[in-house]
Each structure stands twice: as C-alpha cells, then as structure tokens.
Length: 363
Image 1 (cartoon, rainbow, N blue to C red):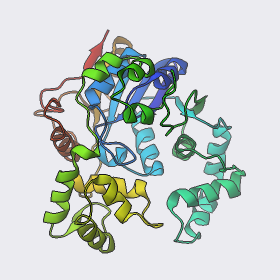
Image 2 (image 1 turned 30 degrees about the horizontal axis):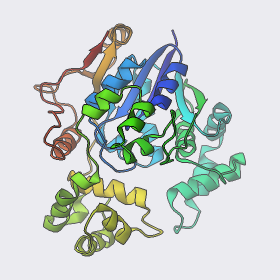
Image 3 (image 1 turned 90 degrees about the vertical axis):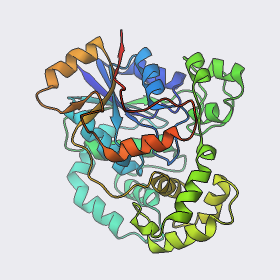
Image 4 (image 1 turned 90 degrees about the horizontal axis):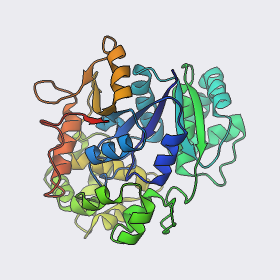
C-alpha cells in the first residue's frame, strides 16, 4: 500500500487543502505544526480543531511537529518534518506548489552534488539572507528561475533537499486558485492569508472553507492577542541572549524597539533590516514569547488524530516507534507543551491543549 506524507499547517484548513488531500495516494499521513507556525505567528485556531478538519477531509493520521521544528526556516522545517514522516513509513511526499518541476530529479542532483552546493552557499556574501542564498544555489546548479518565486516553491525545494537519499518519491500538486499570500476574497479557492484577513466576513468564510461552522465557532487569535505578553517578556528578561537565536545585537535592538511600539506590527517594522528579515524576526519573537531555550528534539511522535485505516497502519509500526497518544504520566516535549500553555493565554475560550487530551478518532 502506498503511504503518502503531507507536511502542513492548515492555518486555517481551506478548499485548497481539501484538494491536496484528495490528490494524495493511498494512506495519508499529515505532520502538522502545532499552535505556532513556521513563519513565526500563532495559529488562528488551535491544533485540535485543525486536526478535526483534516481528518474530515481525508487524512488518516495527524502527527504534531515539535515546536522547534515547526517554528524554523524552510530547510530545518522540511528536514524535521520529513524525518518524522520517514519513521511512519511514507514512500511518497505530496505538496502543493505554484511551479511543478521535476523535483525527484532535483533531489538526485542534490544528493550527487551536496558538498559542492553547500560549499557554494557558504561562500556567498553574508549580506544575503539564507533564502536568497538558497535561490542562488538552485539557480546556479539547476538553472531554476526565481523571478516569480513564492513561499510554496521555496518550501518545495526544501522538501527536495530533505528527501535526498531517502526512498521517498516527491509528488507535487499544482496549486489552484489564489496565491499563497493573496489577500483577495476569491470565490472558492481563497488562500489561508485571505481567510485570516477577512475572518469577520462570514459570507466569504462560508464560501472559502469546507468546515466554516467549526471555524466560526472556534476561539481565534493573532499576534495582537499576545503583544502585551511579548512586551513583558522582552522588558523583564535580564539576558535575552539566553533565548534561542537571540544575540547581543538583537537583544539591544529589542529592548529599545519595544518601548517605541504600540502593537506587534510596529515592533516588527522597528526591528526589520536586510539582515533581520520579518520572517526571521517573527520566529525569534515567537521564541521570546514562549521563553524558548535551545533543546533536544523529542524522541516520540505526538499523535493528534487518526482514522480506522490510520489506526491499522500505526498498529503495525508500534514496535518501531514511540507513539505519544496521551500527555499526563507520559512526557513528550516540554518546550512544545510550554508553548501550548502560552498559546492558551491568548483567548479565554481556548481549551486545554495537552493534559487529558486524547487523539481524535474519526470514523
């Protein structure tokens, strides 16, 4: 049986995600970011609600990405996610992208020339951001044109590197409808960005989502809900360099910048430079919010939900993997659990995210 992996955030789940699941082959295993996203922002609705939506539209297993994998740049995000999916026996990786290339050829190319390609990146000017360096590398070695590049395309190339040398076939699906960050109200295939931006327009939400009622009734959050908590963390930490990826220069800028900002957007604008892109800063500010310190990744897999087919598949793997289905006496990842506790502070109606929660069984 084909086992297909999907790396996702579902922030929130929309028709494009349902289409992606419908195009995936065989048993469908989703590894999903928890309550904080790769670009450094809180999920608009909690991980359990998003899991329920995914299971209702074809996912057979939903696993959680640990916090220090979920909130990372594209390469680390992709590698951590693929490593988890490999443990549950996937042989295909399906993903949406604006540019459908021969990604399996690119994976073989990277496997063959990894040393040369990594050396190429290391010799590029330090003034370039890592995404710019990665684009330069693919342009030089694979003649890829980035003039119309997009986040999904960048992630697709990160997945390409992550599966190099593994027995996993890449299966790109052409993205339908609005662009990844398109804020316009498309009639049907609206982006997650558009849904977050226009969440108050219930007519639009009802058109743009396969599960609008579940989304509408859920507690919703954004960075605005956590800005005061973030300011408190910045102002009261004696040494911000103890936080993951914060150096002395940035710590000084943060202490000054937070006093001039009235909201999260202003703080981000005050801090952004060529060296510190907004995406990188959002991730670092997320680390500060949850008081994230460098830590080892957990050795177990956190199960959020499954279908009967998913249960049957997992029962065949139990001897080979450590599966965490209930957090209580069994520990999983202290940092992810700490992040969930902070996430719950964003809205009084967010339910407990860990203690007593059991995986959702969809049948």
